Structure formats: structure tokens, C-alpha cells
Length: 527
Image 1 (cartoon, rainbow, N blue to C red):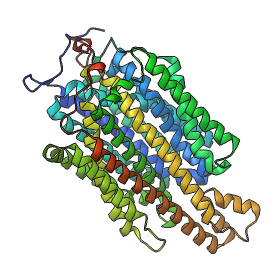
Image 2 (image 1 turned 120 degrees about the vertical axis):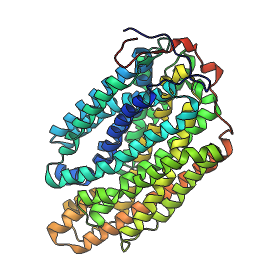
Image 3 (image 1 turned 135 degrees about the vertical axis):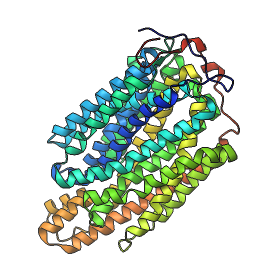
Image 4 (image 1 turned 30 degrees about the vertical axis):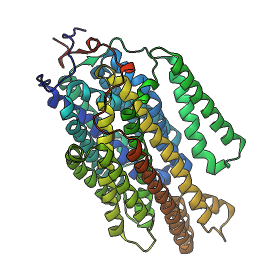
């Protein structure tokens, strides 16, 4: 591979890379793929519960298998991009993502779907952090907010497209079509990356450590499994306690191993810089709440309000529309007010919207939900976009792969734990409130699985009282989940307001490496 002369970090006095906006279009294509896939699955979950006989725990694992692998593999993914080329590894990540989608397309069993989603998570682990790593490598500091805002807008655009197209497919084809639709999107992203993204790398970056990777995957997997299965087996059961204890041990060993390595995969030195640390914490807590919100809504729209999959997708649109609006406003607000004001403000907006949503009752129509959903989207954009841009600004240019991998690992771990914890809370609250009196043990067990199963049982038995009880029980669990989301967002706002430093973040000296270690190539690999 032939490389051009090393490119020093862009500054205001130097001409920025003229290819940067073309490269951003390829990154946008990657973000569309990830944003589209995330929301299309949420709409498909109720249909999959019905056609595959999946209970609430299985549905959580269909969603969480992606997030766990995604979070666990981002550390080595960032390093692979640093060492072997970010554009090259982006292409490999998109190809792996496609392979997982094909597995999901042909699956006839929920466990096979979980495997396919895990493979897709492995591909996404390469795509997302390396897409982020390209931004500080080719954009000067004054343009990074705009670039990150554009990426976020692309993810936001993928969010409504996923439910709308997914709903249409589910209404006219089999549920596996929601995986098959990824093929043209991934093909477009692969072509765009190959011809538009310049190759960047850091040959001096740390090597991928197999033991560190195993510890991260094992620790995160055990943590999410324990939180997910706690309500089913009981929090005091030997299985759950043993799994959570194993998670603590594995993650502690991961931290100890990283602290003893000179150039670790998990670069904890970056967390000593307050700008990087608190921007990453803010982004992580936003994802904790946002993932829980996206999980509870599709079943509410379909089972409680009686919408089909397509109309469920349409009813999710206010959230990404709010995010699209915020993506255009947030960079200008940061310039005028600073991140220490804008990020806590966005988190407070999310909290307020979640608190309003937690008052949803069975009698409320869609208009009430649409209002607070749009506000959630605004708050998400105002909090997430400045937080990610601020964390990226704290990274030395030659360590953007490692650093963005760490940031995205924290973010996706929070999303996985949030989905597991909030999903478990929802399931436990639903079971506690569901009235199955008068049902046989077998029918009661089916109704306890999910609100989708309860409605199917009620329709089979002609039991309208069961259907009403299921709606009320699900609304109780959803309201409690939204209340917790609001409390987490409010706590995050307070922490960020107090601890996020003022001014522009600078990279810690201990994390810096010589700028000459970064090589940049033209998209075709030539000089």
C-alpha cells in the first residue's frame, strides 16, 4: 500500500483537505445504514414475537445481541483501523454487517435471528467508530461540529425511513424482508467509501490484544445477560448472581490488564482528560435513555393503539424530525453558549419530555405521544451532537481510532445496559399488573410473555377483559420506564453542568503520539 506524505493536523492557517466534504457523503451513507437498521428492527419486534413465538426476554436478546457485540468489539475495531487503514476496515465492517443481515433474512428461529444480529453488531463495531475517526482526521476544528451534526442528521434520516419502509415490508412480505432491504444500502455505502474516503492510519498504534478482547466481550455479555434475566429468574437466583459476579470480575481484570500495558487497547489515560470523559459520559447517558424509549414505543403503538407495522413507523417520525431540527441548530448554539450550557439543556429537555410521556394513559391518543416524542428528538440532538463533537475534539489526531473506539464503547455499553435494565423493568412491571385470573396455567403463561402474546390469547379466547388488562399493564410498565429515563437524564444534566470543563477540549499529553505517525492516502490508494 502506497502512502502519501504524512499530513499534520489541520489548523486555521492551513488549507483543509479539499476531499473532506466528499468523504463526508460516504460517512453519511454508513450512518444511514446504521440508523435505518436500528429503527426497522424495533418496528419488526412485535411481528417477530407473534410469528416466531418469542417472549419478552427473547425479544430483548434479539435487540441486545447486536448492542453487546457492538460495544465489546469497538475497542479492537478502532485499533484495526488505526493500524491497517480506516477506509479498508470500514469496507470490511460493511461486508460483515451484510453477512449478518443475510443470516437474519433466511432465519426461521429466534435463536438464529440472535446470531444474525450479533454478526451485524460485529460489522457495526467497525463501521461506527471508524466513521467517527475519519472526522477529526480530515476536518479542521472549526468544521467538526458541522461534520458531526451532518452525521447525526444522517442517522436521524435513517430513523424514520426504517420504520416506514420496514412497516411497508412487514405488511406485504415476510418479516425477514426487513433484513434483506439492507443489501442496496450497504452496496451504496461500500462504493462511496471505496471512492470517496481517503485512507488514514496510525502504524504506531497498539496491537489488538486477544485477551483484552475476550475480557471485554465476556464482561459485557455477562453484565447484560444478568440484567436481562434478573426479572425472569429472580435477582437472588444463583444464575443471575453468578453471572453478575462474573461480569464484575471480568471487567475488573480488563481494567487491571489495561493499566499495566504501555499501549493498551483500553486507553484509560484518555479518561483523565475531563473534556473527553464528561462529553463521553453525557453521550453514554443520552443513549441509555434513548434506547429505552425506542424499545417501549413500537409495542405501545401496535398492541395498545392497534396500528399495523407501517403506521407504527409513521408514528415514530416526530422523534427523528426533532433530531433533524436540533442537528441544524445545535452547532450554532454551542458557538454562542458553549457545551456546558447546551448539553445539560438538551438532557433537561429529554427529562421533561420523558416525564410528560410517563403520564400516558390508556385513554390518551396518538396526539399526546407525538408531542413529547418530538421534544425528545430535540433534546437528543442538543445533547448528543455537542457531546460527540466535544469528545472528538479532545482526541489527538493520530489516536482518533483508539479514542473514538473507547468513546463509542462507553456509549454502546450504556445503550446495551439501558435496553437490558429498562426492558427488564418493563417486563417485570407488566407481569405484576397483568390479571390472568380465570385463565388456565398454559394460557396465563403465554399472556405473561408479552403484551403481543396477551392480545393473541385474548383474541383466541374472546376474552376482552384480558386485552384491557394487558393494555393497562403495559402502559403501567411503559410509564414507569419513561419515569426512570427522565430521572437518569436529569441526573446526567446536573453532573455535566457541574463537571464538564469550559472552553475547548485539548488532548492529554500522555495520550499523544507523534503526528508523523498518521498517513493519508487518496481514495484510490495512490499518492
